Image 1 (spheres, rainbow, N blue to C red):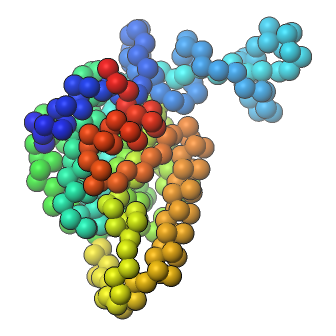
Image 2 (image 1 turned 120 degrees about the vertical axis):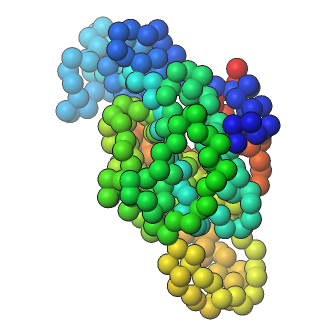
Amino acid sequence: MRHDPEVQNAVSRYQLGLLRVPVAGQSGELLGRGIGSSLEFQEYREYMPGDDIRHLDWSAYARSDQLMIRMFREEISPRTEVILDTSRSMALGGEEKPHVLKQLAAMFALLSGQLGGRPALFLADDRRPVEQLSIESLNRLDEIEFAGVGDLGQLLMDGAIPFKRQSVRIVISDFLFPHDPDRLIRKLAAESAALWVIQLLNHFEQDPSALGGRRLVDVESGGEADMIINQDRIQQYKERLQRLQTSLARAARRVHAPFVTLVAEQGLTHLCHAELCQAGLLRAE
């Protein structure tokens, strides 16, 4: 996957959407989206009870008669953690979804490596602890079997992913498993320097079409159900999907994390140029 032409093209054209700062002592080179205590000023916002009064800007108060807080971008250590949902649901609907998942993983790892980011890739399946890949073992992405029947939420509850403090975490999943978005996102963001949340779907999951009578099988639990997949069912599904995406986006905003939904069939080249750049996860060289 390291030598995939689309991945190589993306690595040559883009860089991670993280600011660069001079290295100073033990601090890292990258800047997160959270609010911290680095020297780079980000923006003002109105003072709220409980804010650290040391960040009050008295000159702004003198000008506007309003208490304002100076907000700074936080410094982060140059470590990137890419968490990949490798459960069975990620392989449904053809080859595009798992293929783009692997491409995204390789691209983010290589771009992080170019910045000295010491990337680690975690394969979120049923193993405890999860399998971890380094930038030197990216070719093993081709061997992923997508056989897991668990879900990312359970892995986090079990503490099966050995996160490092102050890392940049990039999570790629369809998020089509039962979970509480607020709780899940908070756990993913805990003690991180930055969190990026990427929902990867195939075209049918994003915009299904009527199929008539079908026997549906849950690939992760083995449960079966007979169902008529008509326009009413599709509308109900779309409404649930929209509620899920809205909840994930809201939960991500609360921890200063971008959230973006990608459709695999659009291809890596389009996704980089459009959705990932628009969300600020990538920027052109």
